[in-house]
Amino acid sequence: MLGGMGRIRFCASCGARLPRNASPRRLYCDDVCRAHAYRDRKKAAQDFVLGLMLAEAEWNGDRGIIRLLTCPTCGTITFAGGDRRSDAIYCGGTCRSRAWRQRAARRARRSA
Image (cartoon, rainbow, N blue to C red; front, side):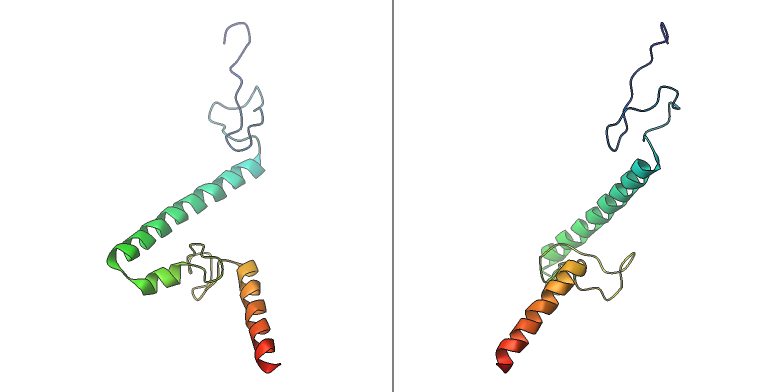
């Protein structure tokens, strides 16, 4: 370093400045940003695999797989298994609750 001035580096996740004495290999400002980046990478890899599976199912005309890979409430691509239950139907709790409320409203209309 010339004259004690080093290159200013920033966190790869949030953009905050890294400390001057940070290791050249350091990418993130703290453990929170490192964990956030890890989750983002994991989600991106999972989305890529799901996209490939969905594209292959569309190419083959396999409607059953397409139906299994999409949330019936919002249409988001989902994947049962891995970090989710193997029999998961909805993308999350919000869609599961929304579907239940829709079913309950239909039952109430039929019985009224």
